[in-house]
Image 1 (spheres, helix red, strand yellow):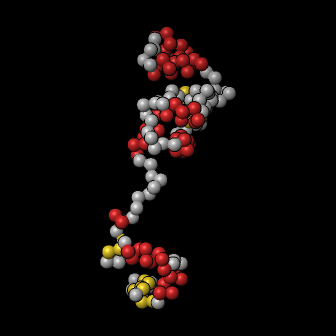
Image 2 (tube, rainbow, N blue to C red):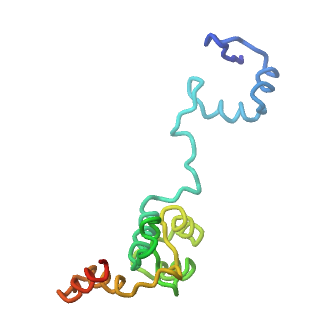
Image 3 (spheres, one colour):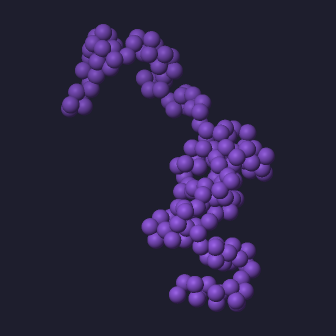
Length: 162
C-alpha cells in the first residue's frame, strides 16, 4: 500500500505507479529502503557514513600547520584589509610538502584538502604588495613577537608613526 500526504496532512492511498511517478523514484528504491526500515521508517543508524568525511582532527592538524608559519601584516593597507602575508618563497605546494614531514601530519590529508582549507579558512597571501615596504615596522613587529624589544626600538617606532 502506498500513501501520499495532502495539504491538510491527511494520508491518501494511491496506486504504486502513481506513487513512483509522483516521487520520480524507481521500484528498486522502495525495495532497498523497505529492507532497511523498521515500522516503515528507516533509522539513521542504518545509513552508511559518508565515505569522504574528513575527521576534525585532520582538519585541525592542517590549520595548526598553517598557523605555525610566520606572517607579516600589511603596513600601508592595514586599514582597508585584514590580509596577512607569508614568506614570498612559499606556495601551497611547498607548504603541503612541509606538512607531510611535520609533526602535524595526518595520514588522511591530501593536497586538495590542504589547499581547500588554506583558501577557505585563511586570508593569506604569499608576497607583500609592492607598496608595502616598511622594513622598520616589520623589524619592530618581529622583535615584539620574540620579546626582544629595546627602548631604542620603541622610541624609533614612535618617531616613525608620528
